[in-house]
Length: 287
Image 1 (cartoon, helix red, strand yellow):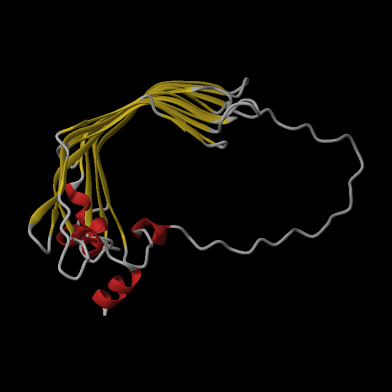
Image 2 (cartoon, one colour):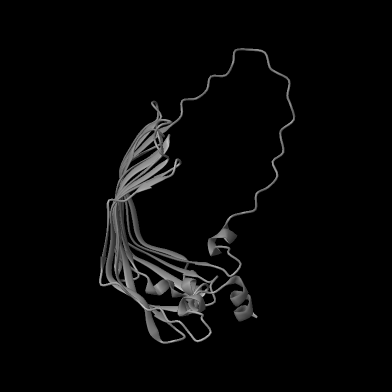
């Protein structure tokens, strides 16, 4: 992304608002549609862990409490009625996000393209559920679909997730820090339901139910130039995961065409111990 740093960080091809109705007396406003197309965002995480957009946020200034004033006689002032604003639908089409993580020695690029978003029933009333429908393309091969409801008060979500063919290879630099393994191929698939936010003390704060699959995984030993582990499919079915309190159960694990290579050397060490780095190895390689 280095050559793209000079490009605009944010650009939007079109933006429109339609169907606006305002009732000043009742302090109410309704917007039928907010729509936008062709938005592009460019971001990165610097080597020190900061995000490039953080420089846009002004530093927080120390608050000074106003001097205490003497109470005035007369009837108490009436509080004004807060405005109620409802947005019936928000549509974002063909958006793109290019993000680069520059913390690893070799930067990691993430491309979200296209991003199509549909949001309905957005309101200043915090208890109003918001309907969400999101489609994300990831690094040209994968996609994520999210559909369901979110709420602000109490904070919560009930979402259907569908993750298809999100490849591991672009994230090779993260693996380089802990293992001498090459990601030749492999992809994540996931389908299920995610609930966040409990309405009672007996419910978990986070619950996921569904399945997970890792397909066509091949990890190669860089030192020996041999396949270290590979499989056609590993599927975890009937997952039930709770967080706070933590509980997990699985109905079935299906493994297809598993291969793993274990080599014992003359000094009684194995390729497994050589593949995975220790903290000492990392310090040595960094120096």
